[in-house]
Amino acid sequence: MEAAAIWVDKFKKANLGITGTIRYYDRTVTLDGKAASVLFCADESKGYAKDLKTNKPKVTTPSDEDFILYNTRLEKNGNGVWQTTRIVSTAGAKQCLK
Image (cartoon, rainbow, N blue to C red; front, side, top):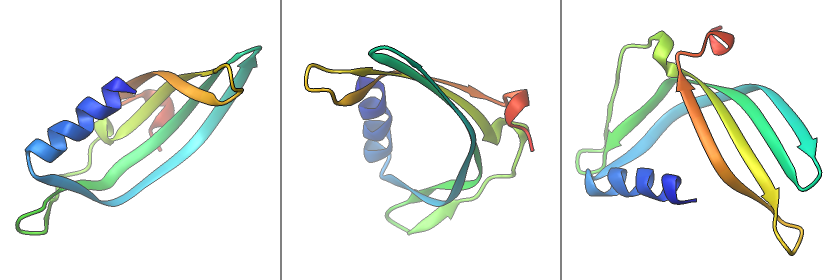
């Protein structure tokens, strides 16, 4: 998916990696023929960018913005393989705050 590739490229150019823990929860799957939507929450309050030169995490103070709602759309291709065709994320989503 192009958006994910752009996101990864930004980390590469900044010489950053990812470290820590991200928790996923409250998933909902809706099927509709050749398409599906998957909604889920992520607690990213313990996930950090890491400077790859120093190997040190860039620790941030947790906030409501660390709770992300992901809304994805998947479609079956001609070979019957599910592929993600869209991802929308909302930081600070009330239904994800726990």
